[in-house]
Image (tube, rainbow over all chains, first blue to last red; front, side, top):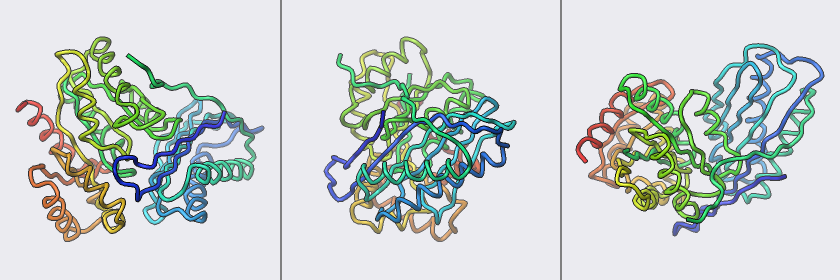
Length: 148
Length: 205
């Protein structure tokens, strides 16, 4: 179920080590959570992942991106490093109990295992803190390796 | 069908630029636009966000389209050409792609109607110092910039005029033939100029 990726930039430049991790989750709460709180949770999660990666020795944040999709709308949040702030966009119109969460972390100077661990730990902590349960889900996507 | 790359390092603002350009080209220029997004992480976020704006988007994932997924790029272009017949296809390669390699991949797509368009490389003015002062990242970013037809210096709203001028000079030295434009994709600054540059280069081809 776990999805991860690693890219050492094999383009003639061995000096950059980039680890990536992406995962999708279904999150649910016993009570409906208002849109402002969902936005705040999104912001917290991006912040915690970025800070968690830096604590583990990352050189820089490539990006941490989040997409939260609920029945009444979506929220996107991202950062390229905490000193540059967190950008939050989109709109969820009404309180929601269930949503789909997709997170993608690309980190400079950390291996994929560390990126995956930092990302997953942050997601678990933030979701638990806000009373959400979560289940990781498989994401279908176009672009499997194909041969002519 | 002209294939335009919107390339640039991680976090430079490719997706935000791409969404604005695509919407404007669709709504104001009445162009049929499709988008190909390539993200390193196996679960995409960018494609989902682009999709929220009602834009035609194809996601190529699980690797980098400038190397291991080059063949997928060619096939996706062929499918788009046959199935959707867009005027312009924007490709957003991953932040660690080399634009010149992606360009080679576009050329392998079969179909006389598929034409290589200009390469736009987005440069992050706000993180310029951080990136260029790092030997590995700096070298890599320069390599991306050297393949540009247009260098779009992004996030100019977050830095001062003197800072932008310094980097305009530096980038000119890296790629003297590339056109330069200042933009803030988030604020919509300079995007008209960028669109006109892209259209001029397309028409000149």
